Length: 443
Ligand code: 5AD
Ligand code: SF4
Image 1 (tube, rainbow, N blue to C red):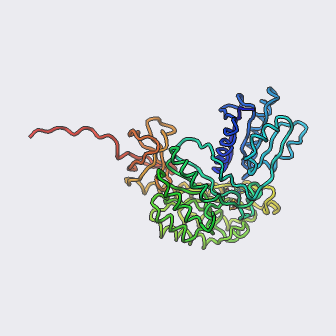
Image 2 (spheres, helix red, strand yellow):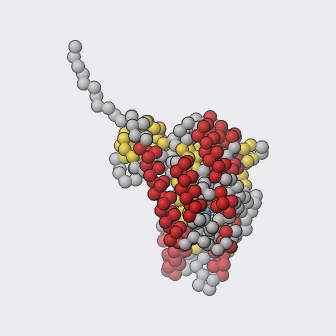
Image 3 (tube, rainbow, N blue to C red):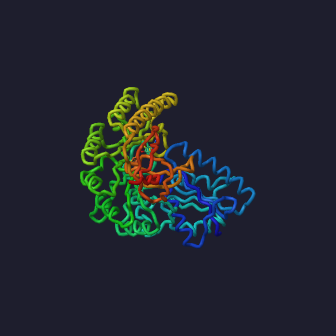
């Protein structure tokens, strides 16, 4: 058992967990391979947030079942948020899965894989003390490093499966985090993104998230600090002040609204009202010039009326989010809302989602158009995805910017003037572009 193929589904937390698993496997002498055909074991790191995510994983398991038919020694494992649900499948007669491992079982992964080669293994216990703070992840090279600072969630929003799949909220200790930041900087990463389900409720040893932001920004070699996702109810003045006063903490806050209706917010157990959310946005904008606020919205939650939906549209129009992730409500087993009969038809959910998307595209487009002619600072990440003559990066407020290659390497900062826009991208011209030689004039 030496070669492992690892595939990741879902959110950035899962991407970071896969880097953690990669670190654990490599320290145990195993190698990660790029193709499942070359592997002794395959692991799918899964997501359970919406039904669609689960279906994609189940489809992929079908591919691995075929691979296993051709190579019966192959160990097939499932990790992450679907582990709890897939445990029963281990006992299936036509068994494909050999290993099911939940988000708190990764420390023992090499051992679990070896055991699974002989007999099916399930390790789905949640451990309220496991943070993996001492384990160095094997981070993908690149400009950005994702650092998990908090695991699990205690908020129990009534639609959300995360508190059940990932367990109770735990913060990683500050000294272990600082060590990770320093390693990331030494490995060439220039931006750190602090990750947690409700990242701004991070706490350790009397320190809060404001202290953590300052500690991250103080690490030599780190140009930019971001974080995702804060909970509106935990957005303290101390945290806002830290964002406002640390030049390396970027002026972008992803603040999930979920709904603009107080009735729905209450049913969701979000713990804030529409007015309180608007007040958080007002405080952010007053303290942080040019701050971009983006959001998550769920369309068609159980009980959501046309009036509630209109309140959400109005709230989005009032806030004018820079961008938004918009989702159709998906009932998840284990959650409180799963027991409530769904009241919104698929058709209405789809239409409400479309209305939210169309409004958001128009708003994002207008916000981008207002940037025409302005200069922004871009941290270059890579070559453009479509056009090789272009560079790709993010502005300080997390807008995607592409511009003609001016020789900048990934990790460099560039001043760029915006010359064209779409609702999702800004097109710029580098102000570092080599200029033609001036004509030599005589006399
Ligand atoms: N259905 C639809 N969207 C959901 N989210 C979380 N749970 C569900 C669900 N059951 C969305 C929320 C959250 C984002 C990560 O996913 O908007 O902020
Ligand atoms: Fe889920 Fe709510 Fe926790 Fe976010 S805050 S992970 S939506 S329960």
